[in-house]
Image (cartoon, rainbow, N blue to C red; front, side, top):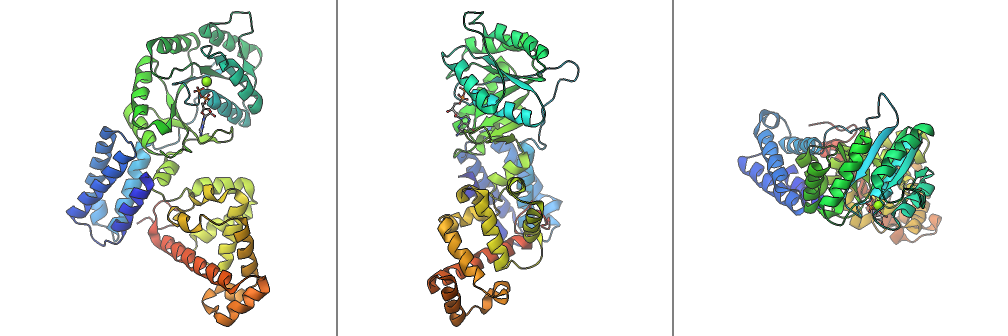
Length: 443
Ligand code: GDP
Ligand code: MG
């Protein structure tokens, strides 16, 4: 994947004290390959590489103690830039409500699902949205939206059977009146898509646009389709036009490539990210978080947000301060992290969000709840001084701990080894190993 390749580029860069022209060129070559392999469009790759090279040769790298780290920071910054810089928020209608949001895109990209996600999310932010079924192309499209609306607990405006059915433009137009009369402050219009770009569909979308004059047109695109996404994005830009992009299916393998290309080529910001079939798998798109993800620096902010929702504030603060503090990482920290991670949900999803864990995943990925029970038992059988300084845990202590926790000496050995690995990684990170981490020195 893109992040695997970039991680190996960074590993080889990290060892260097001073960068030669050849170092810069070979790094640029590797990044170029990594981006192309991840389906980032060629013009985007060219621009990106040119900018990174230019900055890498400049004073900001020459005048720093750790040039390799500075180059990594530059790559991160440029990625954030290409992904749009700031998070783009919805522009609500300022004069006359309702705010009209229209969804456009090919069939199967996730428009109908997104309508539900967006509706639920907006309702959670004290809005009163209504979903509009303006996809009358497929026989069950209206029913599908009604099901989605029901699950999202958001009302749906649909053409009544035997009453003006068949004209999506009319349905969209009427929905605005309906919203005004029923105090819906946001209207989300689901439209029809085809499997490929075709002029009839474009015309219909353009007609709906002209009838309702949306405040936001969102182009919905499947992140899994790679290069094709760019062509479709351009076709919709020419045929309908749009203000922002919603990227769906980011839970799939191909994350990164499409996001990087679309933003750069269309000049339209990515506003939303959809990461699964469930209504909750949805958030505003954060360029900095996406860049971290692509660079496999872990997505601490997302993890923290998730943790915030699951835990008391104090526990989260403690975890953050453990990650940021100068103190060495202890077995108590290890245990606390493990137990927090366990409460957060399926381990495999979360590990990739923790800094450096991408690389450790193969090792730790197999940890299940039973393992965690055993680890907890072992650590709890240690004395406070053993926990603070695991180096003192010799053979006889291991036997005592195994007996006390009802485990085998091999379990204790395994845990201690695993802990030292984790501690080593934490030390590396605390010594400025990764850019963009809370509490890390920048250069
Ligand atoms: P539409 O034709 O554009 O309206 O697309 P739908 O909303 O009907 O979605 C098509 C399929 O993609 C459905 O099976 C959805 O459950 C699925 N889907 C939508 N969004 C996502 C996503 O973010 N991740 C994944 N894995 N599946 C999604
Ligand atoms: Mg649909």
